Length: 202
Length: 235
Image (cartoon, rainbow over all chains, first blue to last red; front, side, top):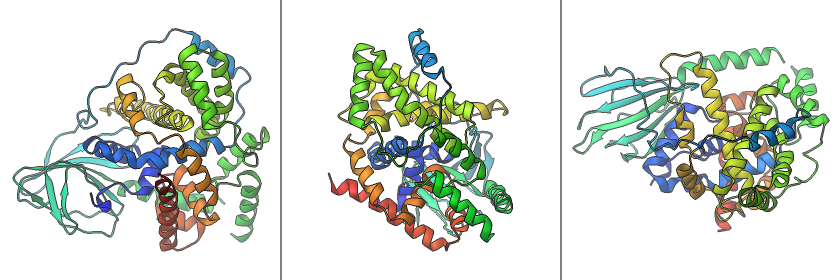
């Protein structure tokens, strides 16, 4: 698959480190579920993350830390409950809303996310509604396919759009296209205020 | 700004030679952490091979001495790492504790043929960290999202662990990455570390480092491509 339709190295690095926004992380998980072979792209970044831990300066533990850990491993533990459903199955979309001809959209609540997630469904032959955003936009195609300047974008593709990017995707083929997307814009404003405050305090 | 950034730079050189903290609080936390050990100058003590042997001993003999060795190397580092990610010291310590306890329970799922031991442990740590942050957040929310998603990334259940192992790098990747990381030019390494520890946009990195946005983007691309191609060329 075209590299522009996969998570960037930067996204993979933050996924491996755990710094990635949990909303975007969920999109990456959905991408891996659709295209399991793509998990191998994480390998170098997992290795890097392990190396960063080895090189991390230590923080002193409480004096009884080890004895508490030894007590915890000696205690019987409940077996883990297996999780059998997929990331996509566990999405809890809110009410669907009309979003233009042949298009509907539902918000997806993700606790702790700094991005806002939405599911969007567009009928065959229809175009996705035009939308403005001031931050980045991330999209994973869950079902169907669409066509835009990049060509045909199929299920499993992960697309990152910069704020200045504009595109007008049209659903390709006979099936509806379902996408999960994450918008970072509203929080970006808060982030900038945070940056300004940090600079002022230095 | 000149004087402030000078003294900030001095603090940084003294306490975190490998990375640039973003807030004074983090510098102070790190200063405290580093008072107990000067880690960056020393070569890391535990190799991935050693960690893999210890995991094997834990999995097959319930060897508590092996567990204690893993704990004493990793728990202080995982705590330091969590503090670097902005966690308060107490919460960071609990996270490190729980990670090692989870390692004890899951050790049999680790496959040394498929991945570096410390990277495997770090994945457990990341998943716990995300799960916990989400749970804390959810306490204040209505109609929240299913916490089981964190587990889907590969940690909690045995079935998922098999999948997680499939995706791990081979053990020797870790040594290659160590070499690649050290070989990166300083300006590239700095941005890799900022990208590792924080989910900040490139524009904010550019602002902090007072360099053009295009420079940030090209350094990130160069550094990550170098790390990745170093690994892939070695295969």
